[in-house]
Amino acid sequence: MARFLRADVRSLLTTQLRMASDQLGELGKGAGKGGGGGGSVREAGGALGKKQAAEEEMYFRRKEQEQLAALKQHHQEEIDHHKKEISRLQSEIDRHKGKIRKLKHDD
Image (cartoon, rainbow, N blue to C red):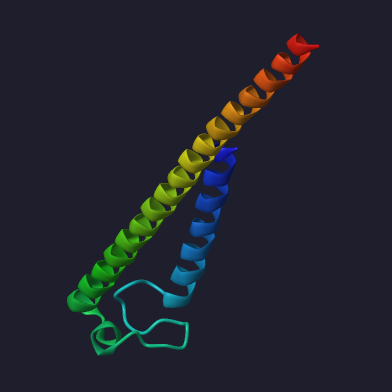
């Protein structure tokens, strides 16, 4: 199931990146097609525009990685919590089974 979720997330991210790149035009080559210019350096294009575009892409990639790491950590904490809860409930089941066995022996 995790494999399917990873594939879905990867597919979603790829789709979003394609849509964003379609609106931007070629990164660093001046104003994009999306209606917004992206700032004076980016509008000017050239080497500075390409550098800024690359830095922005790196920033968003890093942010995405941080968010994915936080999400993975959250899910791992949830798994650990549920495993502890399963263990606690299993010990309760065993305790109740012991009481039933004791009642059967008392008969």
